[in-house]
Amino acid sequence: MKPIRERKHRLSRKAYVGQLAVSYTKCVQNRKALFTDGIIFRTFERILLQELALGDCDALVYLFMPDHAHLLLLGKSSRANSLHVVYRFSQKTGFWLSRNRPQFRWQKDFYDHILRREEDIEKHVKYILHNPVRRGLVENWKMYPYKGSTVYDLNQWE
Picture 1 (cartoon, rainbow, N blue to C red):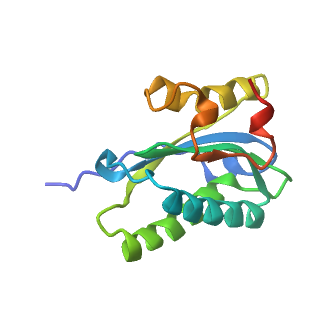
Picture 2: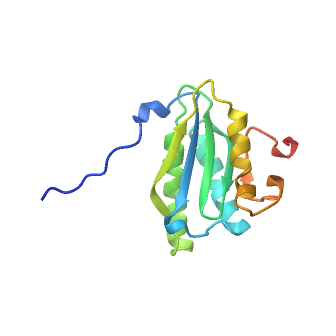
């Protein structure tokens, strides 16, 4: 009996290089609620910001729901690689979890979507920001604490 192979569902690594916007969604294994306090959020935010700088990328928005994270990343140069940023972020935060919260870990894979040039980035940012409202966690997305951007001042958004 032949072993069952997983089907590849990711594009070529080259597809993630350059000045393009990519939306990533990473889930906590078994959808456990991990992001429920500021300590974990700030730790993961710090790691994300370090990896963004190394990968020459910006975060149009990042938002950590209790059981998953949304990252909308934008390459700042032709050498930028948001996929590498997400892989390194996953590795470093996974290591942190193994040492500090061993009952939690990331799911093996994540969802990504490369935005087309004609897609409205602001619409994607707003969709992500409204996630906590749709989930019933807050009445207004501005009240949700586990979010940020390296590009926008989110407090000025409606």
